[in-house]
Image (cartoon, rainbow, N blue to C red; front, side, top):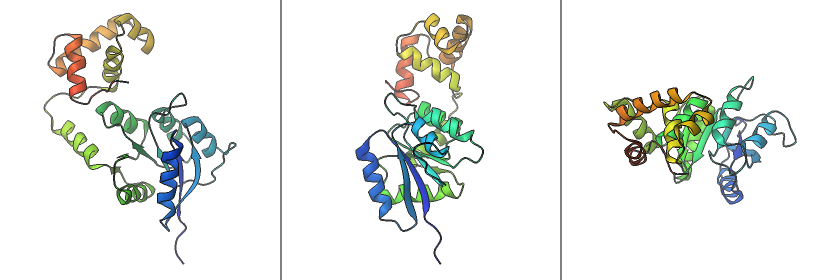
Length: 217
């Protein structure tokens, strides 16, 4: 007797994307989409037995940015805190260091890009269900570059500050946004400048964008 198909929860704010993924999985005997969600909050409701109860879920396939709803990273963090959380596989268009690092730190099992071939996405879902890490080749290469690079890696807090810096926020505004003191912001900026090999805010933003550490939102 063949094993039960993997039960998948799709989380993406684009109905066309969800429809395409559902059709792709429908062609596989070992996979079945049991629920869909347009944002992280609805996904959590489904996992927690809310109005869109998905029952048992083997893998959550999660986008990162979902309009005004709960974003993917926040949802991953909440899912990881559940008593018996299913693995979360990110499927997104975003491939910057900031996005990858945030998702992995939140608890994502894998990270795939939407331009990946269908069979590669399906194999990543199978790997996630087995508890294995599944990374798109470009993402794996980027992570390896970070490990091999002689440059010190930026911390998630430093990336947060860079992202806010790119939006034109002042030190005071950044301190309010992150609930830290202005002195702490200045200390982080000193470390950011040193790690990026720059000496001013504009150069820091330009270098971070060129290296894919942050992206313009």
